Image 1: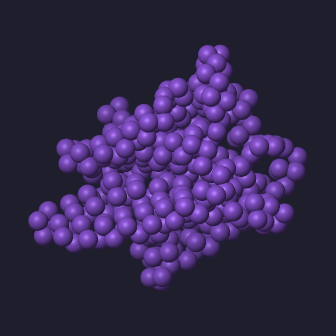
Image 2: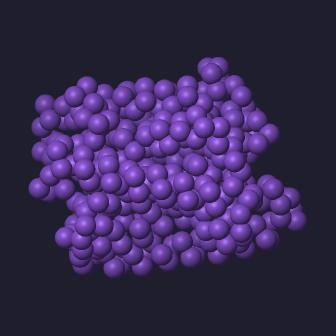
Length: 357
C-alpha cells in the first residue's frame, strides 16, 4: 500500500460513520424524536455521507484503472474491466443478501451498477465521463415529472412494497430507491472524473478545490431556498421541494451539486489531516477503519442492527439512543479495524472479494 492515498481511507471512515448514524435513525424510526438541535445535526448527514461514499468509489475506480487506461494496453484494459465486473457481481450479491435481511436502505446493489458503469467507461475520455455525469443528473427532474416518485413505497417511506417484482426492483434501482442510479451515478462519475484528473495529489490545488466545494454548497443551498420560496405558490410546496430542495429523497439536481460540493470539502480536509497527523493513533485507527469500509457497511446491518433486533430494541424511536448506539458501534468497529490490520492487509469481506474477483 506504498502509493495509497490515506486521506481517502480517512474520508471513507467518516462516510461509514455518517451512514451508520443515518441508517440506524431510519431503522429505529427515530427521525422525529429527540431535541431539535440533534435532529438538525443528524439531518445534515442525510444523503451527504452516502454521497461521499459513492464519490469515493468513483475516485477509487479511477486510481485502480489508471495504469491500464494510461498505457492503452489491451490486455491490461481487459483485466481491469473484468475485475470491475466481478466486483460488481460480488457487491450485487451482497446487496441482495442485505435486502433479503429486510434492509431496504442498502447501497451495495446500486454500487454494483456504478462499478459496472466504471468498467464500461475505462477507455472513455474525461469529457465523455463528465458529459454522462451531467446528463444523468439532468435526467432526474424529467423522470420526477414523468413518473410517480412514491410508487412502490409504503406510507412511511421505510419499506418498498413491490421490491421483489421485476418492475418494482427495476423502478427502485433506477428511479425511486434510496440511492437510485438516476441521478446517483452522477456522484460516481464526478469521483471518476476528479480521480482521473490527478488533482488530489497536487497539494497546490487543494485550497482552490476546498473553496470551490464550500462555495458551491453555499450557492446551491441559497438557490434551493430561493427557488422553493418563489415557486411554491405556482407549483405547490411539495412539488417545489421535490424539484428544488437539497434533500436526498427525491434527489434533485441541486441535491447532487450540493452533495458533490460537501463531499469534495470532506475529502480535501481528510487529505490534509491524514498527511499532517499520520503518526496519530486516532487518525491511524480511522484510516484502518476506512480500509475495511465494505466489512463495516455489511457489519453495521448484519451485526449492529441484528443485535438490537435480537434483544427487541430495534424500533425504540429514540434519537439520542440512536446516536449513542451509532457512535458505540463505530468505536467498536474502529478498534476491530486496528487489531485486524495488525495481522491482515485487508478486511474480511475485502479479502473474500479479492479472492473471488
